[in-house]
Length: 232
Image (tube, rainbow, N blue to C red; front, side, top):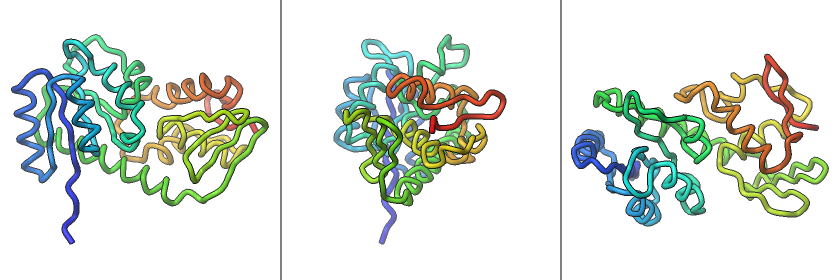
């Protein structure tokens, strides 16, 4: 049986960029779709369910950050990875991008071989996360008024359902699975993002902050100079 192609959606308001990236991805046997604005990207993504969405940051109308946030709010696109495409020298905060739900950054201009390498690394990471989810032992973790349903991928706070993005959930689940253990930053990266990750040093901090905002400041303890542990 033929292996299904990875589907990639390219979003950029510059036709030359779309043509260049699409050509190089198609040569590598990816199934490629393109969009020139945020609204079109959301429509195509909802229809095609891409494995990876590559978003330009600076677009007229709905920019990449807003587009990313809207995509992340669509349940059927929960498993789609998102990488921002940024220009060198662009005054842009990676933290804002991760807050919106980005998984990675790709800086343009970029050589074709390097571009394909980055794409493969992101998709490999997605496969790692998917495998981790599938292998996750079925059951419930409870801690005071917090319940984590590992099978349904849900978190409940005082019986109120809280939906976390994929990596926020996996990070919380990792820490909660062994509440007495202090996880080093290196361990967290390996377990949640995979050893091939290509993200900034602040990634874990951003995700911890977002979790605290949703389920309480004391849910995760910072062990300075070491890493993090669950409040239990």
